[in-house]
Image (cartoon, rainbow, N blue to C red; front, side, top):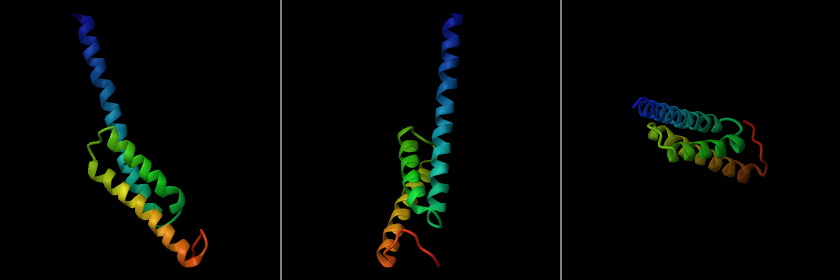
Length: 94
């Protein structure tokens, strides 16, 4: 009996940190996507997309933030492509 109870308790503790990791990835995806609109969109955009996809796959409770991070990551790459077309360079200045 005692071994069964120990297994059940271990099973619940391992599922919770994975949920926290997914929630953290969703928030990080949102923040990196937002920062990517201003600086380093070549690097932060794809990272935001990957973090959002992994967070959604792991079943985050913060699905809205993950989708926002995904959208912002795509927007980062669109801004980069637009700036590359207008200035014919990878970098841009104001």
